[in-house]
Length: 368
Image 1 (spheres, one colour):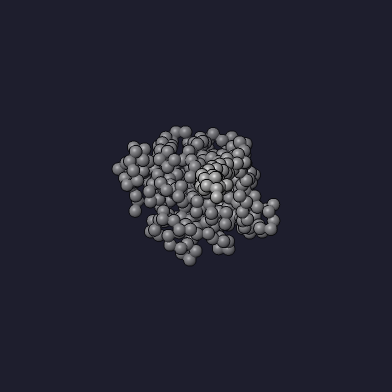
Image 2 (cartoon, rainbow, N blue to C red; image 1 turned 60 degrees about the horizontal axis):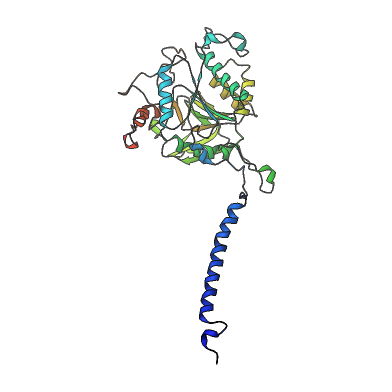
């Protein structure tokens, strides 16, 4: 009989075989990762019932998901510019300030056709300057090939949590502006949107003095802890009925009425349309935009309630009669010299200095 250590499958040989097998398995395990890293990544394709949006995460960037943010400000209104830029820095937003113009700086050939000069009882000093400043911004968007921009006026104020608010607005815009969604069996209709807000809108009016739905369109609502209670809402031109605005929600809709241009987003195609339409007007900028949004089928304009941005009280650039109510004209000033915009719980203007001093959220000042 052969000794056990001379058998073909003795323990020594078996141990060596196990070691070899283990080495091969280990090599194959890591070779899998080497091969995976060396090959190009194939993007995952998923079916969708609507245009596949750019990630909502981009709303967390410094321009809130738009290509640019512009603020219109008269050069001598440092009392507005400084708080605006501090608020932007405190909320991680990049705002490009554009010089607004006064009435006397505008050549007569730049007036809209049909515009009647001040003193006729219809227009106030400052109104044509305001209108022309907005139109010049649309022209900049077109000339510089800017896809989307948020345009705000220099007295704008917003909540410190604005980055948390706008993803819900973006979802609402897509749900309404992209409707009806393309069928899944037509892949050519399903494209990547260039904006987290989608690509099928012209104007998103997020800052105003009041707005309500047209009563016929779809309404999108989402829960939002930043919305003001009913007694803190701000409007002097109408607001949605309670039946369409559940408590504790913010809603997005096609509007019937919106007034004041505190802040609105505009797409490049929207800028092209509005600039053409504004070649003729005898209405102020907000009334003309509202009228066009309601009357022109080619325009897709959406409102948001409660508004995301409001006008902080300060001296108005429009010369209103003493007895006329005007946005942004209150003089009540808190101890830090700044007043929050209405319907804003944690005002970016009021809390800017707190944040820029390095103090935490527990030190924020709230309005209610």
